[in-house]
Length: 121
Image 1 (cartoon, helix red, strand yellow):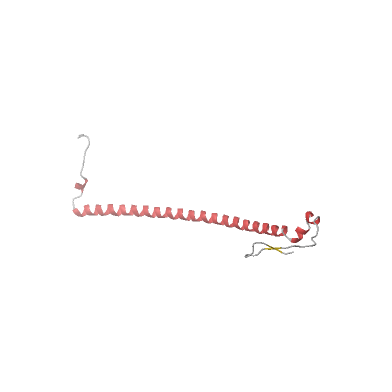
Image 2 (tube, rainbow, N blue to C red; image 1 turned 30 degrees about the vertical axis):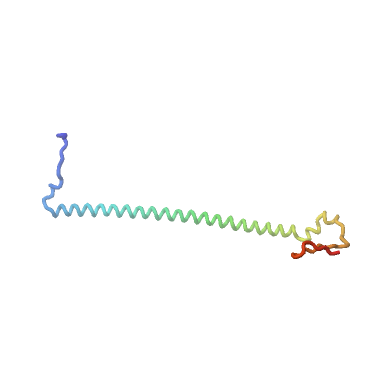
């Protein structure tokens, strides 16, 4: 062993058992205090992260609801446009309809479930 290194037993500094016990108690109190501070700090960080995640998700939900509202309005507008284009008035006023001939003798095909095809004169 190196002769320059001095080892010393610090437990000999205390002369009474009561002082040793008091030092052990102080060590455990201090370590418990440090652990409590660490746990409180960890819970605080967890709380902040949770609040941040919830705020971000709320913002995304609001954006998606706004986009949904706009898409529903666009769908309604397109439904109105489709109904307008399919209306009988528009179909009758097209150029192709003006050049058609009128039908004088009409024959109908009647389709029934129990009969395959029936033709009426």
